[in-house]
Length: 436
Image (cartoon, rainbow, N blue to C red):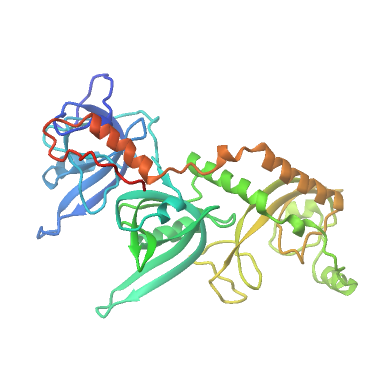
């Protein structure tokens, strides 16, 4: 029987799995579930594979053979937590591996699966790899990794075949404060990429790719997605990514030139000012709140304070305009171009008031020759606040939570060596493994 009620027990550690241990009980969350077709089968049937994670954040791959799909497939849902028992342990091998574990679980007729209400298990299980570590790879890597970075270029492409098929792909570059690397997604992952980025409007997004493969293409290190397995996130509210963003903000705050906050040296001709006043209506803050209609207005108000300073990278056209939002591609209607420049800017939130009320206005620090018309005291306050914010945060505490491939491999290899059975046919030689 596949589903039953397990007694309250202390759950086993998935790091202790080996082929001789079949009586373990494990509490795990299903991080990923995907179909693995059998190319030798006439009907294309195959197994369903899973990536499971336990309460310690350790992952293991599992496989449901075709003959047991009718029992387990509909009962195991991605994202849910289960108590699983009577699983066989076998060597984990394949063209690509989403877990560094030496073994994997295989379901059979004796396996049991019980839903669990424990929400404390990790939801995402990210093991983020830094750009510098990715670029060290000089050959195809079969273990799948998780990568993160700020999108600084995007190029959509389509390949047309003689039989009428059209294959779409997207190539983009991810950056951190040290290095950059290229990624490529194809098939349904392209639509997923577009969908995720459409929801981002606060500058260039941070993209996380989970379960991707590192390959060497035309002499260049390339991160590629795996159809049905890779997950795409854009600006997710995940602790590791929030920490990553904070580290980039600290880095950016130390290297930005804030001279654009100063008033321009050249005075605007009076005729230009009169034309502007003539072309656009004057509104009070109360009128804007009562009738929030899109348009350009003149507001005679007093600048009270700068309440928020948010430095970040923004996509800018050569004209120069800021791309406010990604709509399937970064596109400038004025220039009719899709290419953009990733430029560091500062988004400022001002509090202003007049005799009818107060409101918050948001502006982006633009090019130095344009500047902002604010008082010198406000300029000094901005610079002082930026410096203070940079000192208050310890960079070592907010720099991206990234690891290295060597650290991940070592974590699982040490556990495998400690639990290796005497009849293990794949025992390791004692040769020293090179660092990667």
